[in-house]
Amino acid sequence: MTDAGDPPERTAARRVAARKRRLTVLLLLSPWLIGFFVFTLYPIVNSMYWSFTVKRYGVPARWVGLKNYEQLLGNDDLGKALKNTVYLAVFGLPIRIGISLLAASMLARPRRGNGAYRLLFYVPSVVPAVASGALFFFLLKGGGPVASLFHLFGAESPVWFADPAWAKPALIMVGTWALGDAMLIFLAGLVDIPRSLYEAADLDGAGRWSKFRHVTLPMISPVTFFVLLTGLIGVLQSFDQAYVFSQGVRKGRLTGEPDGSLLTYAMLQLRQFQDGRIGLASAMAWVLFLLTFAITMVLLASRRRWVHAASEGSG
Amino acid sequence: MRARRTLLLIGRHSVLIGLSAMFAAPFIFMLLQSVMPLDQAKTTALWPDHFEWSNYSTVFDRIPLGTYILNTLKVCALTLIGTVLSCVPVAYAFSHLRWKGRNVVFVVVLSTMMLPFQVLFVSQYQIFSTLGWLNSILPLTVPAFFADAFAIFLLRQFFLTLPSETIDAARVDGASELSVLARVVVPMARPGIMAIAIFQFLFSWGDFFGPNIYLQDERSLTLAVGLVRFNSDVARVGESNLTMAASVVFVLPLLVVFFFAQKVFIEGVTLTGSKG
Image (tube, rainbow over all chains, first blue to last red; front, side):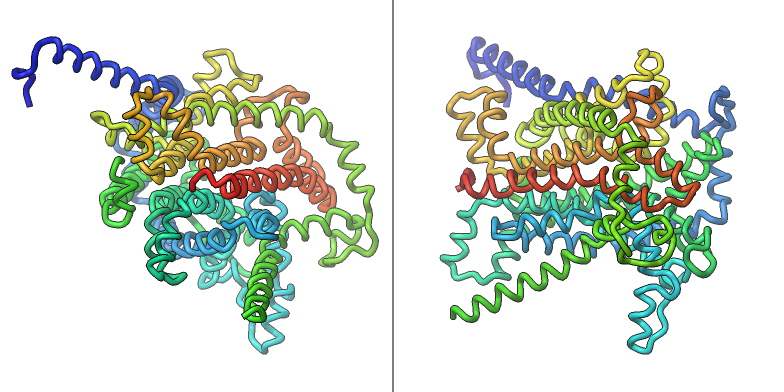
């Protein structure tokens, strides 16, 4: 495809059009571009530099080469934290995505009462951690309502967060409970699906499941991809819930002793920050970044197989 | 046939009511605790002996709620407008426009979500300090006008679900990209745009970290910061009933906003039938 065969004025016109298109793209992108160069790029470069230094608040950084990374690999807690994080991602994410999609598909249509149900399902996502934490400590503590319920059936209740075998399943339960955001995203995706597709499926005599499988799932796959990727980043970075509950265990609000079964990578990193070891914390952040980046690339590569071709086709 | 449908309806509502009770539990627990007398709040009781409504007036007396709510609403409104205005065009460029390097740039956008914010925070503080923005709402609001990666990504995925035939048809009619975006894409993607608006509102309402660091003046604080400081004050004396009352005051406006927003964005779309 060369311009050789075209008359010169047509080539020039095409060039003007191409330049106009480039300008349009640049204009559309400009909010992000400006924000990236002004607010994000410098902090990123800075943290990469700090990861090779010893740096504390208000004190200039001192170059130490790879020492932070070596120290990181030599940390006993690292393996434990990584294992816990992977556990939470592998078991927690599919449960969370499945239930929030189920809730959204039950509540997508404008039926009587659905508005109220959507609101109530969203409650755990907005209630402050003090309140939901207090409720859980109330429910799960020794001799509390849940323990009594177990007694009723003649069984011994686990001590949940204080029991290494139960701490992570309990954490996943608590996390699944706050599924409002994922539900809202699926709801927005579901109401976006053109009615005509379902009508066409009805004409083909498709049943409920078949419509869900062949219309709903492919049509919302870009949205599912979002929930999956941001959920993964969330699991890798979040520390609040695990932190709240391991603190609760430490303060003796739940019986038993912690054994690090709730320790996550992000908590390990937070600890470095609180101790003011910014260099080490930055090194941990970059290891986490590389890990997340690698998983994201795998997900992006696999996307063509399961994210709907027509919708991702232009993307 | 009719009886079967009634049974199905009853079954459906029983399941949903049961689940709702589970999900609404923290709020109900909060409400009950918030009206307990102090000596009972320290016990494991679930139901208040008598309703101590004065807990709420105590909270209103001790926290300048009006000022805090006004400050919070100001930040919420500005960040909401900023996010929607800045992310819609960026998401469009990443979904229905073809250009060289698009995938690479998009991966850069995604990458900015992968670094824990605490790491970037120290340097961002320096930038805001250099700009002379400390002790103002500028560090909390101005960045919202420069397209957040999370919102770009979410909106892009929504734009991808839109039929490209409709968009191409508008282009063939000679519409410029900006008018395709404004007249074709935005009306079709209303649920997605509403979703990022709701998320931004909820985030700004609940954000503690940023306001706690950038707002020093007592009268400029937001509700989330006021709540946490109030809680740590009353926790020392063990007034957990007051903590819960303050939390109810904090959450109630969010639930009201969410209720009306979801009604508009789900039922508005389906009823007007804009998607045929």
